[in-house]
Image 1 (spheres, helix red, strand yellow):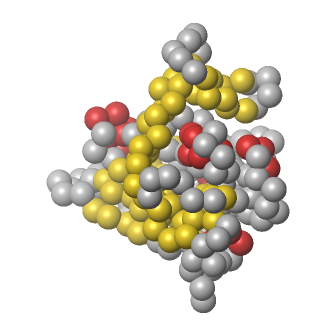
Image 2 (cartoon, helix red, strand yellow):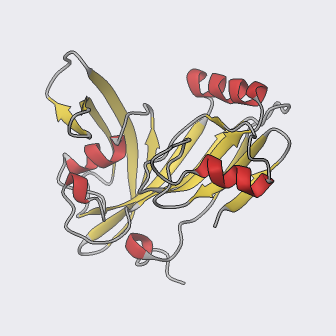
Length: 215
């Protein structure tokens, strides 16, 4: 069930299955439990350094030691850890290459995030760059690079511009399929090394991505 992309004594890079929590959870199936099963170590340490929504899939890196988790977290903080996403959205964003900048407010009672017109208490700035890679009459395949890591950020910023991600009923999509959001590329320095490495994985030719990644 868990596809391992890379593994050493410090980290594991895997493909997060759709419907699984990125972090330990008592209420939902989670990737840390799958990793402990993979290692056959029920009490193993699993350091979570970034997250993906439960409905999303793609590359994730987990630290196997506290020292590795600290090293990866420092890269997250200083901006040297890069993540790139692919998403399928309704329509075609204009222009084909651009930036989305918003203030986002998380409503914990509704478990949703809303864009607000200006800075206010509880609102956080959200910034991303996107590029339309392919398009058809109904949808677009976009590459997205986040500059901030807000809850549901890509989903909300695209939806607020009338381009909800395919399968994202929470934010206005009428398409019934798995969420069209995939973490495709990670770039970071592995603990113990001094030069960044790049890991890339295409999404499967299924659901929202099928028109753009035919078998």
